[in-house]
Figure (cartoon, rainbow, N blue to C red):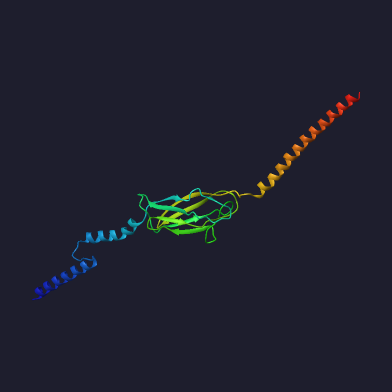
Length: 206
């Protein structure tokens, strides 16, 4: 009787310990290897979903010429794609104007603006207000999505002022110079004519 009861107790303890091991391993009818593979996929999924490499390209507004003190009506548009050429929506694109020299400000009154790409991976910036300093400048453009980054520059121009003070003041000076030269030539001609006429008169008197 003692042995039988001892044997029953041993089998009962064996069954209990097996159930505990199954619970510890998360056993639900699958092998431990299947559970391990599921955990690996769970942790690897976010990394696989991240964008590895970004590509950025200016597709509109490159080389635009802005009138001094005017607000541009032509947007600057960039396209963000993956390495395979697939558009990247939801990427943050920041535009940066130079701190001094030719340039200007964006609609927000600052030299930096951020736009989010649409479903086609495109971001457009409108309403650049050019300053009155003529010359070439560049807009630095940076794109980011998760851990991926990309950058480029877009060259822009502020045109020379039309009918500026320099041109207006130079023109009358030029005209005065030519008038003085013409007067000198005319004076010389008149003096020569008078001298020639006076000489002729002296010859006649003789």
